[in-house]
Length: 238
Image (tube, rainbow, N blue to C red; front, side, top):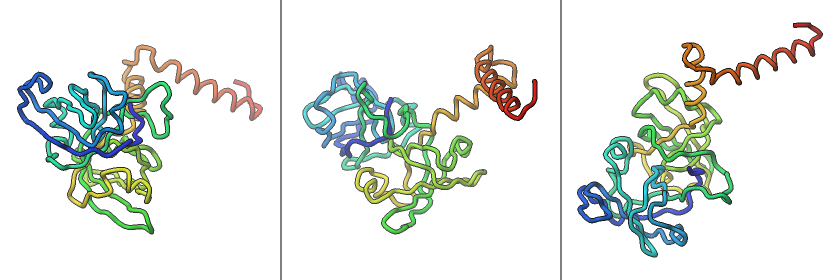
């Protein structure tokens, strides 16, 4: 679990498609350097979000670490397009003392989106994104959260439909702290939508389809109670 508050920006030192070493596991591996700011308390097996993708540390030293990248991860994210020298957002998994300044981020990327436009607005930048899979737009709401390359950002505008898009604004401070600010129209970003919307959708769908198995009952009782209290406040008996 993460907060979406990027800690540091790291640099790709290597992306090996077939890493036969013990720490590579015979698959794709990614080595990130310039990461000393988050490695003072690292352990093998720890989770670190790389551009919003939760990955497991298999090797590390004082300034760099290696992670394995599964085929499903390569299909879902932009990690496979990284090159030596690419910059990436990094965040350690939350601890018991972490301040929840962003929102609950799983590090499970839902889709890739392309940058449609970058528009200056004073000292801020407005980014417009078009998702590869338009279905995710139903989970993106104005003033809600969306995670872009691991950074928790607020949605400022949404356009639904097959050609839909959404926008976020990066203030001057954020521009210095995340890799997205340096990207251009046509570049891709990793996207994770707010998980709350998915859980609500599943619960409501299960209730109306008769498959909720009582899981929706508590919400139904809460709504019923609120309605009763409102009616009583209006002087009506139920």
